[in-house]
Length: 224
Image (tube, rainbow, N blue to C red; front, side, top):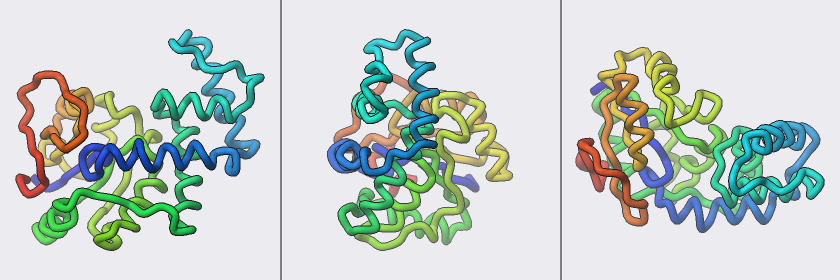
């Protein structure tokens, strides 16, 4: 193993931090950060959602961009426009000291150990690259970004598609088989495995149950 690719939510970071802290903060402050460019991008997503006949349907655009943003957050959608908006909202919150990143206690020592071993460590999350960097910069254990060599988000591709992991393996400049992907979501592991990556399932407190599978399971990064 020469590379490690890590998910964030439910893998490096408790799910409750995302759903109980980050998402409510974004919802409460979204109106302060909407601008013309963001609304245009959101309108394109809205039109696609309506055309696809999603259930539940998003609110009509006449209700305003903010209503659609709230719907996206409530549905936990992974659209790039939403993630870019959330990143800017959270950046403001981190800057004001209202937000602080959180990771499981086993994460910092593992990152240090892997780095000493010469392993290339990178992140793949549906949250924007900005949001990822803000989280790892502001943990109670200090700035962890010096352990991380790269970040990937929805602009790379969906986390449940094998092509995304092929792109990431190319960025590592390593054979896919030498990269370990750790996530709490089996469908993401399925996609990574299809691209040739080694995978293991993170089983953390608060994570939802996953389908039965043969993937190795870990409850701590100390096991890697």
